[in-house]
Image (cartoon, rainbow, N blue to C red; front, side):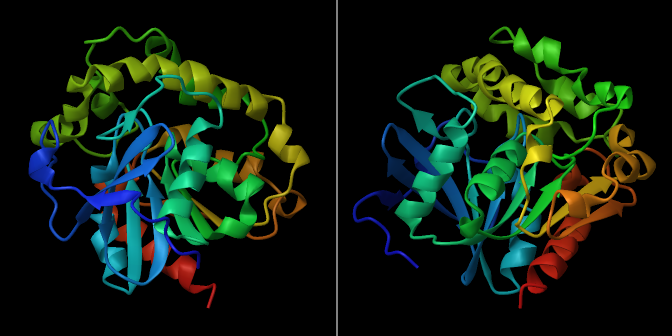
Length: 302
């Protein structure tokens, strides 16, 4: 394991961050400085590193129920706020297709993480997938939640998964994103206090303005690569578990298994899991199931 670079990260007091961090016991908070970026990172536990990459419009707190369950089993769980989200601050508001990937690699270097298991959800899965394909030596085992493999075949039935994009491509600062929690593919109604905790950083103009930047600079270009079958011409060597909630009928089991038939053509070791009573927001809707699936998967590396 590489030694962390000196004087590049500091302990952050939740009281010093604005808006205030939502409550979550057991986490340490760091501000990690890399060129042009000050990344807020929440860490719990000690041991082999597990990095958790949040979805949209979420941040580190998405993992506040899952991460401690994994940490209890002897892992150091690292939950960064990715560029354009949470309490992370960037000098440059621009975000391109691999910007978050480069940010993550710089974070690994500064924290002295040579290799980690990676758990990703929703938009965070873009960065998790990029890391697994481009730098497989940095990933032990991967868990990807609510997002299908890059090698999935196209079907008109997948269009439902992208119906939210036009509104976010033209997001107007100040517009509400609460509709994410009213989505028909979610398994439960979300308490208003939980929604407020996730949307609190939107009070920061840079985070609100990053919505369009993320979709135009990263999501659309990556979606175009998927539609062109770029990842079907590559090979996924990182053992990866793809997990979905059964309420999330955008990606029901029959569709996923049909469009990802014969995965050995594209990957060395993949499995699919489907969680009862879970929807699109799996870490919040089924935290115990997500933690148990993750622990079972990464322990297979032993």
